[in-house]
Image 1: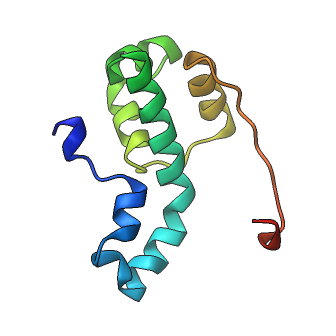
Image 2 (image 1 turned 135 degrees about the horizontal axis):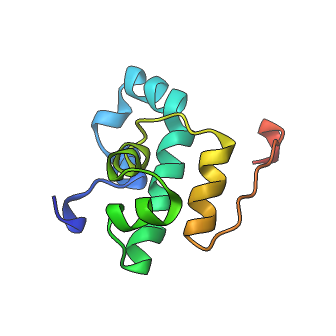
Length: 101
């Protein structure tokens, strides 16, 4: 699959499939995993790295990076810290009131 063939979160939310209530409910249950995965993938691609290269830099197998980028895992804070460090990013975790958004 080429980069241009990938569906982004914004693209998914704009699609007709997303208008179904069950799709919206399922997305909300996994939203954070998809957003984190997309952020990691975008930064990795910005750096020109393969999934294998990112895995090497943070001590994870390529298959774990692939699952993470596709929202298929529930990452621990330790995993998020390792990924952020390898990508030259700072992990920032916040809890906010739903009304703050």
